[in-house]
Length: 195
Image (cartoon, rainbow, N blue to C red):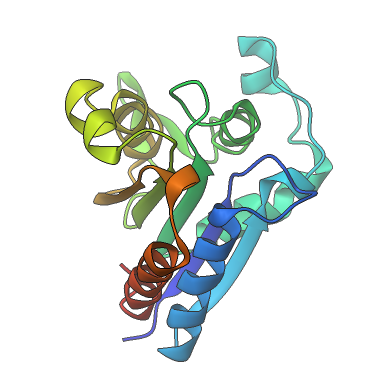
């Protein structure tokens, strides 16, 4: 069955192509070949300020360039986020983007006595694709994949997106063309299944 798939490219360097971009392209190729409908958001190409207060988050208007992003999130049935691990976490630009679009009234709302009970992005699944310089096993077992777990629990899960699967790609600085090709083929297969 065809799905609506939203790809969010979170690499903040929009001036050069990186492995994250090739992985996104491979996923998109697989998804479109299988008949899924695909939209893309390139966070580096967007112009928006970082939020600096709770009041801004709750009361200020959404920056004009992010209305399409919210519409794409509503349209999506499956969301895939791509980003490199920077200082052990997602890049600040991606975090700022998620803070802007996941606002009260859009991503969640009060219901009864709970201010966060109405998770308005429920019914969507996600995959998080993260590249890193360290071995993925070290990040997963020694560091307990803390930043990916935080993203899954405190952002995606908070607004109802579940289940969330992850693809962690380590040692990216040492990948040879054959290894990179293996990862691209894996992302194409994931795209075919909209997984």
